[in-house]
Image 1: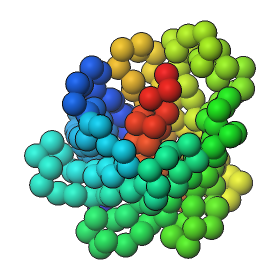
Image 2: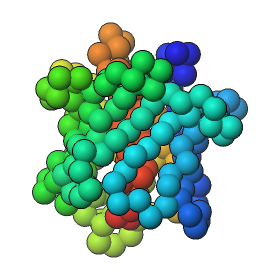
Image 3: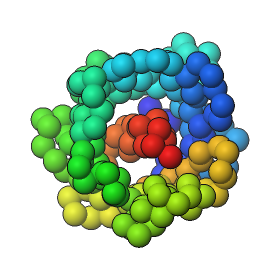
Length: 192
């Protein structure tokens, strides 16, 4: 799928949606919509569908929580066209209290990488003083840098610049990378 072939993306979450938020992920120039998520409101267990556009006719991915409680939950990432599991993302429960950390798992649930917030000091400042300090997440696969997610400074609309160019060997399945961005905007966005 062409959407997953790029190295740079731009993600934007809709602000002030009363009944569920929306996430749009564009190409680097912000001119072409590649992914669309309409989050269901009042859901106890996350079940996220990623579509190719706002018409929601073409499903690309499904992100499904394994449990109701998301403290250290694991989210399976499934390719919608083949209905096959691509891998999973697991939040590091207690470790994520002070600084957000996620594990990237392959289709066999083996840990292959991580998504980690940039610094403990900045994370603490964000949590206890102000959410005006943009977040940065470093992605690694097989102990090698695979990408970076940088939140742009906008206190009203959560936005991320996504860059996978360091991952020249494409060790990170871009479907897992896109799912990580979506989960960060939905799950981590709740605590800010």
